[in-house]
Image (cartoon, rainbow, N blue to C red):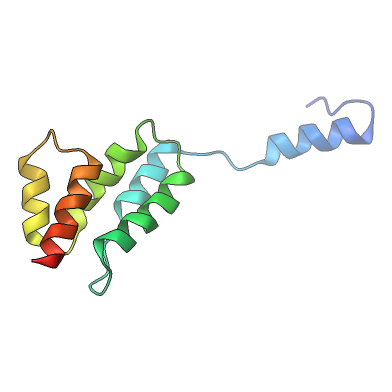
Amino acid sequence: MDTGEDFATAKTKLDAYFEPKKSVEFDIFTFRQVRQNPDETTNVYHSRLQQLAATREFTDVDKEIKSQIAQSCTSQRLCRKAQRDSTMTLHPLLVQARALKVS
């Protein structure tokens, strides 16, 4: 490995070499392991998912978050509704969650 002639170049090249490699597959896997806590509202769960998604390289963050909510939320009614309607996007899903909480 060529580390260059000076310290700054060597440090930059060594840092790049030893930097942990990102695995998109593992990022998706760990994101899919997240579940809504029993005492957590859908809004708080959504915020937590947004924070987690920010560190991942998803092509469509809203779609990934919507899918995760649909698969792992604590409201069976909301899960069924989201899974039945494949055209529903994240915003209408969150509106539905708020409406279900109020009713």
